Length: 275
Image (tube, rainbow, N blue to C red; front, side, top):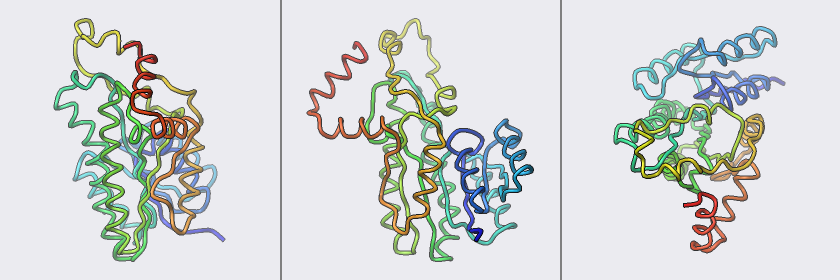
């Protein structure tokens, strides 16, 4: 029997969002794959797959950093369906570099997408879920939201904030039958690495030049389909947990940070970064 539930996914033009949109659509979900640029390579590929496989996937223009774009996207969605069963907040990006070297404007950019963008979309969708007295919100965090490492401070801080917001939303929205859960992936082969932003400074005069050249690359990246499969599996659970670690490196980092004494953890970081 085809499941005609409705799922909305942000940041679907590549990586985890792209694979997740395909996973749900191929399972019969009416899938709204949203992205800033419908003409992107990922957008074109999704349309080709839709035409070939006849799957119920629809592309939705959506820029989570713009309130008007979010509102218009939900208005357009409502013209096609009356409910949203699952919201997957996946859109995001990461800054890489020493915290001191980022301008306040750059810091705002990081939070505008990863935090405020998530909340703009969530605030538009929650009233619909509350009206239907059911719904599931899956927020894509990162192991960096639980275990910060040097040079990822800006990105980690935004994901730390997402962790706190999601835990509180989980409690507050449970009263209305809405479930909220977090996913903390480790390293996966997506466009995230290529799309990392660096602070706009003169690198030659940076006092962190040696540190920046030794940033931690971690484990070999895995296929993002692993995360997509995990997201789909979580959506099938009647009562999802608060959070789910995804990837071998995510599990290792989480328990190392949790179990090692602080001095040993910092000693390890100094050895890795030679700092």
